Amino acid sequence: MAQHQESSIVMQKIAAGLKAWRFGCVLGVFLMVTAVLGWRLVDLHVVDQAFLRQQGDVRTIRVDPIDAHRGMITDRYGEPLAVSTPVETLWANPGEVDPDDPRLTTAASLLGINDARLRQRMRDYASKEFIYVRRKIQPSLAREVLALEIPGFYSRMEYKRYYPAGEVTAHMVGFTNIDEQGQEGIELSYNNWLSGVPGRKRVLRDNRGRLIRDLSLIRDAKPGKDLTLSLDLRLQYLAYRELKAVVQAHNARGGTLVMLDVSTGEVLAMVNQQSYNPNDRTSLSPDRLRNKALTDLFEPGSTMKPLAMAAALESGEYQLDSMINTAPGYRRFGRFTIRDHRNYGELSMTEIISRSSNVGISMIANDIGGDVIRDFYFQLGLGQPTGIGFPGEAVGVLPMSSDWRPVEEATLSYGYGMSVNALQLAQAYMVVANGGTRYPVTLNRRQQPAVGQRVLSEKVAAQVRGMLQEVVENGTGKRANPALYTAGGKTGTVHLVGANGYEDSQYKAIFAGMAPMDNPRIVTVVAVDAPQGGDYYGGEVAAPVFARVMSDALRLLNVRPELTAVEAATQTPGRPGERG
Image (tube, rainbow, N blue to C red; front, side, top):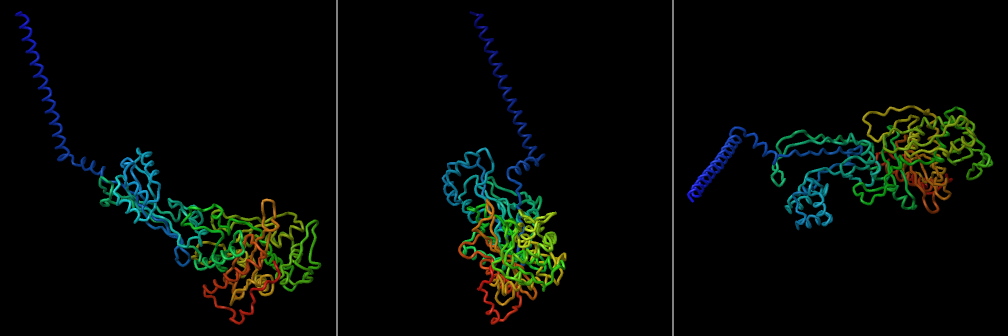
């Protein structure tokens, strides 16, 4: 019994000692932790203040990008064709957004997006810190959404491309994607020139991500460079209006019009039908994107006859007063027959052009040879790139042969068996209009005088201009007479090429010409694809467009009228001549 009591006392003493030891250990640890924390507080607030400042900065200071606006595209007189305007982009941090927040319904309604889809995106990307909610919207709309004070919703400024002239300049200017990178037209070919370099800045934001103030600039944004085109927006509107009207009037498949300054090679207008609105591409079809004046090739038909005649006169083998007997009005080359509209008998050089005689020009071609005509066409710029730098430009086909067959020489003289685009044809006529000099064509306004290459003598150029004026006054192009001005040009009507060769009932109506004839200022090419109904000849469909466009364009350019109102009334521009 005594031993049991003694062992009990010993156990009690041991237990008391353990309690005292544990208490001492806990107290020691507590005092040590308190000392460490105390020292850390002193260290952070007195010795190493930079640490707390750095941690605060990490939570409130951000580096934001500074968008650089894209360079502006203008016409030759500074009228804007493409500009970048500031807009707002809404974004969200899905980790901060409650997908069940009832305010999301209001936000979705304001933004015109699906409410369920918006909530699902917040759930799907909950592990992300950034998603776009709606890009490039009006600042007023962004303010309405932000006023809902939805946690995790933020905005930032961006730029959006806008095209003031809309569909009128769409094929020339092109457009950008949502990130302002060029996709078509000038926007694509000059993308590096127009694009800016973004900057960066430090900003102070609160715990809800709202901007408090800008702190410092890291790198300033460098805006893109502006670009001045050779286009005259007044002439572009005029050309577009008239081309659209004729395509609708004849229920045509499409059309193209190109206008050049004959003394500089600058493109003053270039339009196509069908067009599109680059500001609203929601229902855009790919077939409307092509700038057909550069990308689409066609056989130029009878519009090549004056150029073949120029080659003959330049060769010295024919003179202006030379005569050609075209009887009986046709020529046979094996199974292939060349015909005129009727038997014209003996024709002068001028009459061959004014009456669009296939027989007459083919006889001349066979006499001087295919190489002479082909080489002259090449000097005019056919069968080679124009150097305009436009994406998707088609070069065309200019045949070459070491042993020309007579039928190949004949068809080459009146524009079959070869292909051009509308700009190439306009450039070739420009040489005749300005006295024989080929200037490089350009879409940019020239800052220096154009430097060209003489490819035709002034004498022959003047003689061919006289022939072209006769075409308009008494030949196949009577409907091309512009009011108050003299004009010259040539009609062309060619079969369109389909999947199985030439389409018997589908034509391209063409007119290429210049005005005024005392000192030509402008060359214009009009081409209308597949006009429907009874009228499909170049002199009936394309020539009247030329007349209206040239008349108004010359007045806009302050070119003094050559004719009085009485003289102009006697031109009878509505009466067709020989069809060609």
